[in-house]
Amino acid sequence: MPAPVRKAVIPAAGLGTRFLPVTKAIPKEMLPIVDTPTIQLVVDEAARAGIRDVIVVNGRGKGAIEDHFDHAYELEHTLRSRGKTADADALAAITHLVRIISVRQLQPLGLGHAVLCAREAVGDEPFAVLLGDDLIIDRGRPGIGQLADVHAATGAGVIAIMEVAAGQEHLYGVVAGDWSDGRLRVREMVEKPKPGTAPSRWAIVGRYVLPPSIWPLLAATRPGHGGEIQLTDALRELAASPDGLYGVVIDGERHDAGDKLGYLRANLAYAIARAELREPVLAMMRDLLETSG
Image: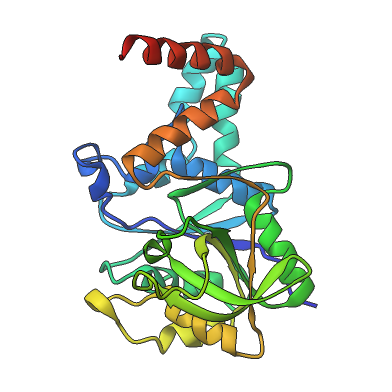
């Protein structure tokens, strides 16, 4: 029986150039969704799925991420002295979500390389990978937990997939294969196929559960375009191996916060999902529509 998924990797070494100038001094992973840093939402998803160790693969200038998950004694003490116990308790809870392990990606050599940087910290056990730009409002079971359930049942690697609109396939890694029991046994994989050549409209999105057999495949992966080591190259090898690879459509509402419009949409979606903000935000949106034009 496969070992449980207890560790997760979050690649966080990117420069965040799509969000300049704010990311000149602030890690993009710390940009807020309403009042919560993006990376905290991703870490919370992992924690609710039973993951206890999160390896953050970071780079220079990302110290704010570690600080956010650290104990803030002075701030908590000040809040408690002012009678703001609930706020202090909420801050303390962040520290206890998971154990954060920080490793450096010294060069920006691609997602596959970023994951490979976490090899020693993960060890010889299955692990999750969560991309910080992908946010999932789940309907009960956390998104990464849904993938872990499939791994527990099959022992295979598992990736999250979604059906994209025709003509958008070239923006993603695209997979094809055989459907059975509500999941796709991956047989073919193409990274950002040229228009009109995609084998399907099923695209890989930012959640993975991988067996330890991925490590030698990643280590043997040669740099491709731009000198980067692509995770999809190793996934293609995993799909052809005895362990295999499945694609799963996550039951939840996914938001791509990796560009400005997606980020704004995610903020609005998370805001209206909160009971205390829903009606004021909807009223604000109606007012903006009426006054803008």
